[in-house]
Image (cartoon, rainbow, N blue to C red):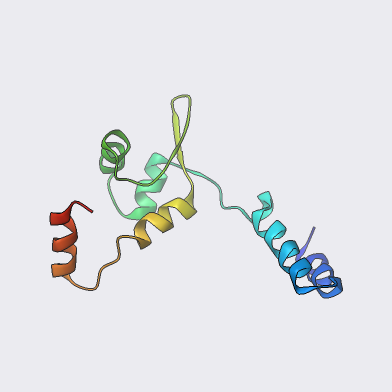
Length: 102
């Protein structure tokens, strides 16, 4: 289904809730999902080393990941959420978070 077909369905939806449901289905469809990243690609995406990401996977505190046999995959939206939660406004705020163990 292309964007024009989706737009037409939204315009023809009888209610705002129906339009929202169409948008939600489209957002969750495989065609709109970003591909999962292997650990080296995820580390590069985040700007950290692969070994740091491996350490997070062993000790906790890192982004969620998917384990398929020996393969570890990361969802880019999980990486974005993890990074967003670590935003700070100053170095003193970062130091305080680090001291508190967050």
